[in-house]
Image 1 (cartoon, one colour):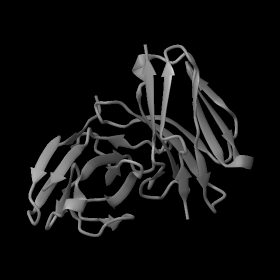
Image 2: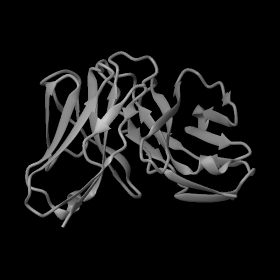
Image 3: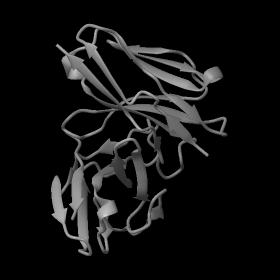
Image 4: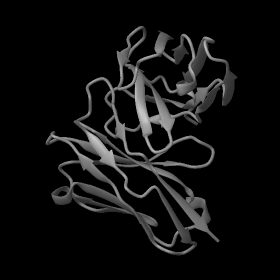
Length: 117
Length: 114
């Protein structure tokens, strides 16, 4: 069965600090997809990134970077030089292959990130 | 701008009442989903639909039903609300065969059952 674990319930940092959000997943499939979503106080989840299981290359997008390691079943998310606007709940999610008719994602419990000025 | 709209941001209902949560998307997406969000549990899938009049159970369908009469609209129904259904409900949609797997979410409906 699929499972996503985000062990950090809540993290507080001061603005400009770097912060890493951990995500560990379990799946029996060899083909799967990993996601990160951000949920700001407004409530609407925003898609950040998707990686497939065949692509272990790390990715950087501005202040965001993702480290995918199949050997440890982890897909960690780092925010460099954090800002107050980064304060949100962050969810890691997993789907076992793109389902033909849609994507059934399994979500982790989420990590609340608080960035203080 | 793409949009998933949930009809009510906040609802307060009494135990035993029938509750309708409405979701409309304007992106012509085939797939629509209802998730429930609870602290410490993340998002759990209740039901999803990949076409009009089609529905599939998710991980926690008990106590819920859904309706998809039109492509753009997906309704979640609580036939007889109970206090353990107090939660945040999130609707999402996605394009059939999307290669990004991106789900578009609404802002959520926070339901309190007294």
